[in-house]
Length: 617
Image 1 (cartoon, rainbow, N blue to C red):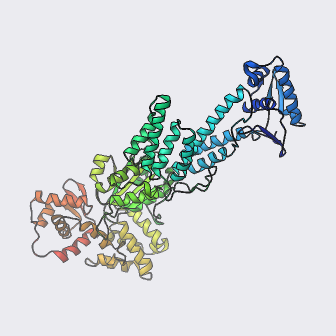
Image 2 (image 1 turned 90 degrees about the horizontal axis):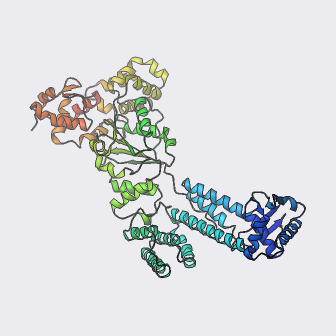
């Protein structure tokens, strides 16, 4: 019945259409309570007698129970007989699922636990608070009898466990001082309850009150030994040791500022832990790379068992970042806990890579780590970062890495995450030691190059100047950056010029690099190449310049040695250095290729730096 409501989480009371009913004497209330607490299960006459009087039941106990049932039905009104039904020699209280505060409490606690299992601590805290708000005092207050006494103990324990679960969620939300204040009162009322002491220690530790956390442990430990003759349990002892060790992973992530929860019974104002979504915008004119995208998707399917690392490597301007970002946007749904992204600045205008410590700090902020909980030492920050990623399905994009050493501290430590690393370096250490899967990126195919220019220039213009388009593709060496710069000049810088005139500029042996400059350092092909060139050693840099003098892009070790006036073996080291930097592409052992745009850059450098007979020192 939905118009009659009952409470047992405090005094046993009943209302009909909002008007409170007089339930009579305590033993009559006890009969109603016994039926309510059973939650839809029937009770025999003998069970009710035992519930109310136990071994001291009078001879008239059965008749008294029937009298109490009669009176309760009368009190409950016209539908009293429907509410308390006679069934099989006993009685059953039938009411709507929302009519009992105990039913609503159980339902809310179940929902809170489901939210917590789904990593939604904010919703869990709110539901726990709503459930606990139903309590108005001691359960079954004033109800006599052994059954009420036993159920009172059970319900009080349930209430206390629910408070512990709520406060554990409060700690996950970072409200350490608020939780510490509440827990101090609970521990004072229940000094031998180890779980409460454990939570209090965590709250104090999270609030930066380490000494108080340790003192709380010592107080509880002394009391356990003196009153019960036992030592603290494993869970409490472990928390104590980890606080002594100043363990940065002891606490979960918290919001940027510890929230104020307000009254104990409500935590709806606590903000949730953020879900990072740091990916840069996707390119509107991305083309090709179908095989590479399929390969990354296959790798993503293996994250249930381990951390999966994929290195996307290749020469400057080949589209490594574009591929990583494009695939990441398409596959974002596979990583419901978010995406982290950082430009590691391994190759760039400053020449100074981003320190891993700076990248870690940015990730910790994005993950909602409370500033007060971030350790000072870099090694502990790495452990803290990996702890926050544990159990999450996240995508981590480490863009433009200088080398394996810069990447390694940023790798997650547990299954569930996919890491995409882009670099001009081959990152052999990451492959050898960390199990990374190598995904080398080559130039676009002719068809993909044509598709890119069609997207940028329009199908009508490409069809009208088909021969010029084919020449532009060849002169740009199918390099995505060069093709995009050329398309930009054709649409923005020189929209009225023919594509044939652009091809003529690129055809000039000494003017190609100037023709690929749009006045933006990040898009200037010469500048982008220079970020790799300036990291070369002296011999490798000189070899690169001399290779521009080779009559074709197909180079053997012998022809390179001849250009440098050195022996075959002496030429191997600088050639391999160029291949590692992706300023040269290894075809087969002893044979290399140099695409035409890099050759033009090498020629330009050679004119500036070299004179006389080429040789290697």
